[in-house]
Image (cartoon, rainbow, N blue to C red):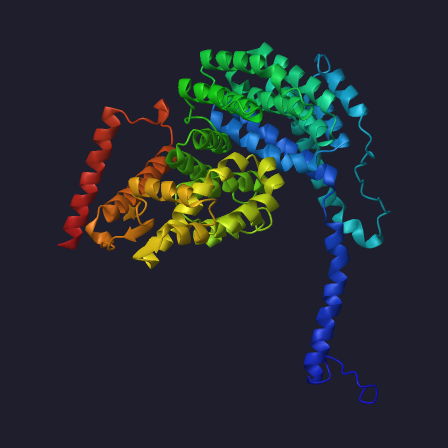
Length: 533
């Protein structure tokens, strides 16, 4: 070893420790094949997850509790990663009745998808050895237990065939699978069939499944470029949901309508719909609320209501899933940054350098830096360089308005640095077109109380006034009020989001039981007092 120049990792250790570590390494190497054997087959794992969802659904149907159905809808995200042609075929066979009118339709949709079929692995059988004779009795007991479990499972599957929610849920999974496989026409047909099937039962436990059906139906139509044709159908569906007091359906359909209007830049119609409707915050999911806040933030930003727009966009970013939905959070932060700049504030560096968003927010970082410095040339350069990105993000019209903010920032800096300066020099520093335009802009900023200065038209100069102490103004009070209002709003939302256990009538205590309990407690207290004395 010394001649070759390569040292063994055990050379510098005592012999006992080196042997021990080598043995541990062998044990670890022997454990790897065992761990590989314990890996669960993907098909089996997917069917187990589907079974768990169905069990939760059975509980939701029997108890008529919407929170259990919400839990089933949340499980769709995990199931979506496990969907396959074989898994869905088994799901149809297990949970969809043979006489269902949608069974053959789902099978035909799946047959059009080209995907290698998964075969569930069966354990290899080997002849028993002489040493295994002692374990035969235990194996027999296990086999009897397994047979009993199989009977229970078969009875449960038979019971689930009579639950229409299970059938609609499998149809929803098929719809999602077709959407992921880019079979948009089949996905639209499957989703519309799901909507008709769910409406035919007229059960309140179907409301959340029906709302998801509308969502994927609208998504498929949007991908085919026919969104403008379904606006009347969405409005009719929203009216129906409002009449049935279906809050989950109202939230989903309201977001779909707002999305449809914003896609075609119909901001006036979207604002009319927003003002004449009310978002149902009671039973609506957090994701739907985040979408609604994002859409309303965009509408208010276009209508120059920057304060309300920024507040809604901030809440949308907070209520969005933090571990997923990266694309949605990117979009929200793009609008939030632009609206914050329009308010005259500079976004934090941490907002622009979040994990997974640095590249997407790079154009907005350049704009923010130009606004912060007040450099009009840098602003125009960033706008020209990233114009296509801003147009694709639909933030270009808002960023054009930022030109006035850049000029205001530059004027503030000049006003602070100079007590008296020629308008010609101001024009050159800000990069404006002419001295006349500069004079008008400076006069407008003075009128809006952006700067505290005067303009001498005869001498073409701007004279700054002495800077006042900010603590002598109402600014600290306004900032304190803003922070207190934010904290109170956050507290109110937290209280609304809390869940309280519903007391069943069976759990209520009668008057006699209460008297007996109080009497027993009084006696116990007296006994404790006597023992102490």
